[in-house]
Image 1 (tube, one colour):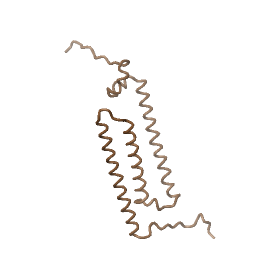
Image 2 (cartoon, helix red, strand yellow):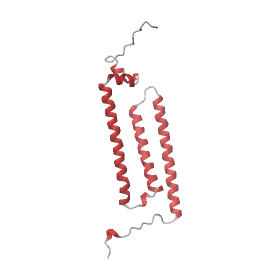
Image 3 (cartoon, helix red, strand yellow):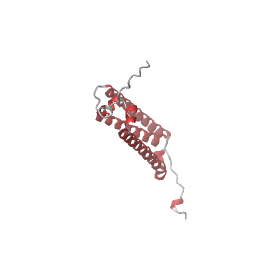
Image 4 (cartoon, helix red, strand yellow):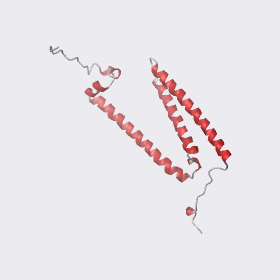
Length: 155
C-alpha cells in the first residue's frame, strides 16, 4: 500500500471543448467590459486633471478603482487562460506567494524612495530650488528666495 502523500495527482482540466469554449468566451467578454470601464475611468481622471481645481480625493478613488479592476483582470487571465484555476492548491500557492512577496518588495522600495525625496526636499534647499516646480515651493518662497544675479558690466 502506497502512502497517500505519494499518490499520483491527476486532474482533468475541462470536461469537453464546448464547455471550455463557453467559459473562455464569457471570460473574454468580461475582460473586455472591465477594460472599457478602465478606459472610461482614465478619461475621467484626465478630464479632472485638466480642470482648474482638481479634486484630489476623487482622483485617488478613481485610481484605486483602476487598480482593483486591473487585479481582477489579472486574476481572470491567470485563472482561465493560463489554467491556474484548475490546478491543486499547493501549485497555486507556489505561484501566488512569491508574487505577493514581489509586490511587497516593489511597495517597500516606492515607500523608501518617497521618504528619501521628502527628506532631501526638507533638508537640502538647493535641491528644492533646482528640481521642484514653482507651485510646490510657494509656501517656502519667503524662507528660500533666490535673488537674481547682479550684472557684471561685461555685457
